[in-house]
Image (cartoon, rainbow, N blue to C red; front, side):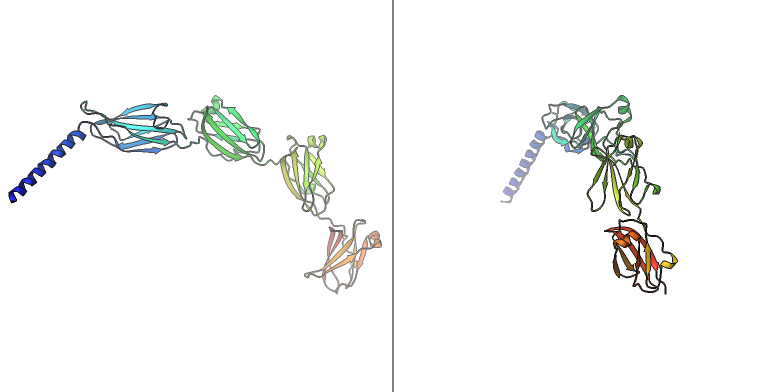
Length: 379
């Protein structure tokens, strides 16, 4: 019985050995295996192919600009003694196919089948970031990699047809293009191409234009402000704004445009105004200025101040309506109406004050303050 068991074991081992030997004959020297661990590392214009080396083999690589068809712009490369290959000068944002097979160094052994893959290159951008000062109200300075092949730049902004600007030989060589005649305070997209191939873009807003000169103290009055600007720029009007009132538009005369100045009159004292200068509806500058506070009061003379009274006097004007008296450091407010006689005499004797007390006295024309004085009554 034991002899039969041993005989079976021997037969089984011999059978297994024979099967193993047959497998080696089929899968071994007859044909090479495909390159193992075929990997694709994608960039913008370059892509790296890597694989595990096979003994006794060179490698055939093919690349096409399609999806596993290998019919469009097919490129072939045969390489040896390497496990990586760099595909260069690819189009960005484009789908490619790549495949690799082992080429046998032994004529008696067949080449392998292909190992394949697809990839999409990343979107390139040849433009460098804007340098300091590259954006102005009227233009932009573009700068890109001068080693790359480009043909033209396109400029687009909302509501305007795209502008196509061809690049000169100098601009291509130096990688620079000066864009002019842009609109201030406007967002633009700048795109660069090689014929129809998109090669990058930048979006930026031009600076807001401000052609106003600085308003000097001597240019500011209580009811007027003298505005000056760069008269080399086309302008048509000035728009005046203040809190609580509708905007007022003033058309500039030809003389004011040529001279580059306008005296804005009829303003309220001590009031903040914003002035916008425009070429039709295009703003070319904006400035905020506050008029000087008006004070029509005279300083009280020595006999005008008592222990419980103050005589206030002002520049003769009918444009006053009332006086408000504030006791210093408190919220005690007293309203003093002005009669026709008070207004004609341009003075008012204010009584029933406290001795040795600080007061602030204001004179109004309705809600407009026209003067202010601070006094202290006598003991």
